Length: 582
Image (cartoon, rainbow, N blue to C red; front, top):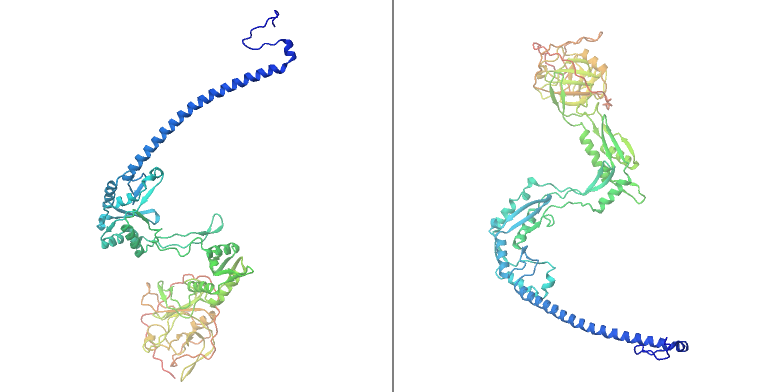
């Protein structure tokens, strides 16, 4: 405040007194606003001046950069007019940055060293060499032609792309040498091929579930396809081919995505509890759903439908395995050597249709079950020795027989069989006792004869007593035998008759093998009260029993035990007088 009353110089600013302030406050505010506007205007002017300077500098830099880019582009345009882009390959030959001539040189070197790589099944590799087939190719101007196709104006984009070209060359080779080279490949060797395995349903033992196994494509090569695909590859100078992708192998018939296979898997899972045991004595055949599923399907209600044809075929396979009827068998004889006994009418004979029907019923029922096969004819035991341990052994060569019952020798004796000289030999083979009759009448065309014990086994031939004979065994059957029956002493015949039943097997064989040990004949005493043999004239036998043949029903018995050593017919026995018909 100026107390002198004079105006104070405030640097050009209008001074006001307190009284003036109090009287006009808006004037002071106006002055301050004015000063602020002047300061803002000055700042804007300074900023504008600076911006103008920066703008002129940026324009200059942009012009310089643009000029540099344009120069680089033009340089690239010129360079790639005569050179291949980066990442350029011609038939797998790297031609990046090369001129057409340089690329041609690379291609010529590649053709001279041409090798076709064959990618085979199991990751195996083999090769076809151009030098082995006299391969030549004319490639003049090829690279230049490809270079002309190159759009050099887009060279900057090509820096980040790959360009692959195929060599259009005239290829020449020796076709016969190529065919020989293909034939010499290991993949062409049948010995190294494995057949394809179709996709199938398998069982996982650990997870206890069924699943689709993809199988194996195998390695069975198709020779014509292989030669064709290799020829095409050579003519186009391909560096390699995948034989699997080129369909050079025999294919699987069923693949893992097969719809039928998927349906079968669903069917198996729905009936996984089916488990059948088909019994053959102590042996058994097992059928689970994994074997059964091809035979079954489901109807609209979800019930199992069984293919009768496939079940019957399975039952026929069982019959082939377990039937012994009409088959030769091996017998360990009482003479301690083995012989082959020819087939006869004895043995197991399955009723295939009835057995198949039982198996089909068990499948439809589901769950675990046992099935007993149906038999048209049975035997004493299962297996190769189906006669068990109760049987009659007849050695036609030694003219001696043995009867074993439950493994024990009941009776043995000499006999006289059919006359060899008149082609009336007793038939060999495995038969069974059809029935027993005592007494019985044997009739021929012009005769009839009573016998005390009659045990027929095949086609009118049987075992019976022959009281008209005084001697048995030896070589009588060569000149004075029967018409096929086994003529036996009455005593042993009685013992055998009393201990034998219908259905008992009788094994009849011949052999040239002599026993190791020679044992004298043991004459078994005849039962008390029975007459001894009285020589008489024998009837002309072609036995035709009066009685109806009974169907044998043999009982399965335990396995046979080793029989005792047999006696032997004395070598000094004289032949009986010849028989004559009544």
